[in-house]
Image 1 (cartoon, rainbow, N blue to C red):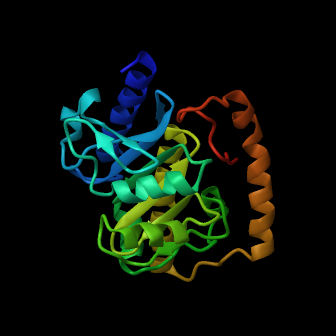
Image 2: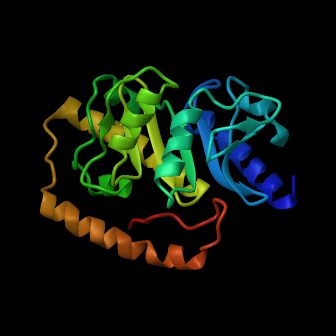
Length: 237
């Protein structure tokens, strides 16, 4: 592999190792991917299945072709490779994906509840709410289809009885969005436990969504390079 791909693989491993300390996932759960083109072949780099992140080495990550899902590497790609592949196929603006099982977002997901507009930062996920995808067995084409539906016009979603998916135009942006969704889920659960959250109206969320696009302009202009190194889709005050 060349120096650029080595750096990309190292970045994926570094973020994978942050899943546990950040509270996004425990053990070997969760997975990450990064859009990557190798020798003119569009594809993705993805973390392997069931490997302790502390033991991950750059060569352990699989390169998977977008066209047909064929992969190469000494270890099998994550069992959730299918929705990584399908999201990157369907959403050319997405460069990176973080899938995790954080406590509070998963607590909502097991109730199959979306995150409504109880806080303006919900708009960080790209819409008026953060949807919860319908349930399907992990690793299946059905789960992938459900995730794509929940992600329509969104950067993140919950997965029923499972966890969350966050996407971004940079790996760091996808990871930060996953952290944001988990923080929002915690706040919403606390609000539900202590009273009735007031939901912001649609017209207010629409104003916030426009404002977020303007806040993202500087970051988008600062770095527009490819192979997962583009700017985040939005930033917030």
